[in-house]
Image (cartoon, rainbow, N blue to C red; front, side, top):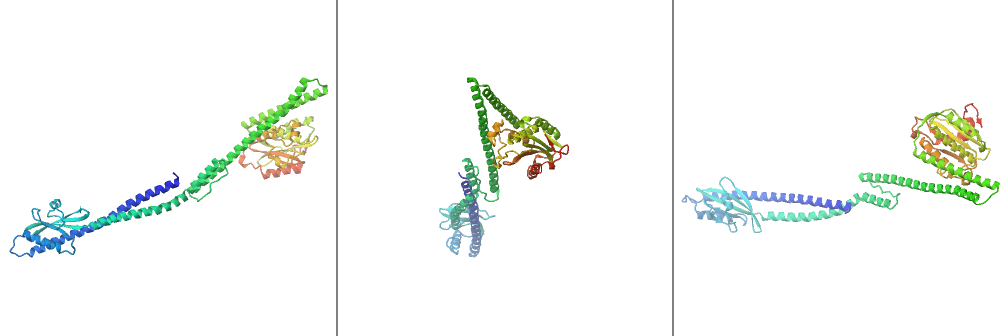
Amino acid sequence: MKFSYKILLWTIVIMAAAFGISGYIFVNFVFETSLGREIGQAMDESSILRFAFETAALNIPSKYDVLQDNTIEQIGSNLETGGSGSDRLLRLSDENRTPLYASDGFVTGTDFLAQIDEQTRIYQVISEGERYYVQTGTVINALDRIIYLETMKDVTEVFEERSEGFSMYRKMTLLVLFLSSVVMFFISSWLTKPIRLLTRATKKMAQGDYGYRAKLIGNDEMGQLTQDFNQMANALEENIHMLEEELQAREEFIAAFSHELKTPLTSIIGYADVLRSRKLDEEKHFLSANYIYTEGKRLETMAFRLLDLIVTRRGEVELQVVDTDVLFEYLKEMYGAREDLQMKFEFHYTPGKMCADLNLIKTVMINLVDNACKASEPGSVVEIIGERLQDGYWFAVKDVGVGIPREECRKITEAFYMVDKSRSRSKNGAGLGLALCTEILNLHNSNLVIESTLGEGSCIGFLLPDADVSPDDVDTGSDISDNLEEIIWEGEDVYETKDDETEEI
């Protein structure tokens, strides 16, 4: 049963019970009041008849010392016919409670008569057929005789009024209940409308429409429930989108990994089959072996990068305060002796401290420098930059290579994503370097800031916050972007070097 119908049903039941009880009490109160008034009038009339009897007995001639039975009968007849109406009924009985005179229609029983005594006046309500009477009893002392006087007053009208009252009240109750049911039907429908809207919203969401929201009606408890439901739906939709994105990213990761694995394996198997199945001259033999070696190294690099990425995502780091000179000296030694890169490296940095895992930050900087080298032509300049800021230490790697299209900047940190796949593969790239950097920087409460212009070069940097700086307080927005712009366009004049001059390797 619908909730609105339950409200309507219980309202009708409660109203019916309330009307029934209150109607019974009200009608019965009116009846008791009317009956009490009739009883009072019957008792007063009994007193008047007693006084009239006593007066009539005193007017009897003095020759009678004792009131005679026939005289009592005559007085009773006169009292019966002497009233203003013809509905007066009475009975007179002697000392032995033997009836001497009784009106036509008076009850024949003597049980009530036996209860009359000289000290009190009594009454009772009796029914005879379809009529109701108030019967009274009293004692008369007249001329040394004790006479019992009984009267009967017809009160049938009072009982009929009660019956009519109950009948009218039942009809009015049914009418009121009907009208109230109609009104309560609309009220219950209005009150339960938010529930129906919430039910519709849950059905829509169960069918997959996670963007559907319940309409807000009012600011009461139901309105608050609707707001809470919509907030829950928003959170659910966000979680579903996150799960879908994660699932899509996982599928793309698997597809990209399969593709990246298939390409070098195909080449390795092909050249190995050539070497195995035929005899080649020295030059072709060397080229085939070299291709197998190159593709094998690319597979090795990809495997190590992938392993580092998985370990980093599941790992925890112990941050320590380290001198940045250690990192930059390491980079100088590493890239200063590599003639195979055919690049010119320039270091612009200020001395300072950083809060980090040194080995992981070395991995980040190596990946950034390697990417810069892959994106640049031989002989190009790659700048490695460091600067002490208010809340942490800023690192950046700038090149003047091919650049990255604006729409690609958000995707380059995804695993296996490569802007120029042919160029990356030719230099043993697998698209895992920046993904690994992102995971490492997440462990350091930091992230990559990428600015690039297609055909002019790129600058990728990150800010390592100090140990006393909360992650929520780290500003990686406009201030760092402005600082990055200074790094790119103002060059070495902005930075101090260890020897107050630009070091070039």
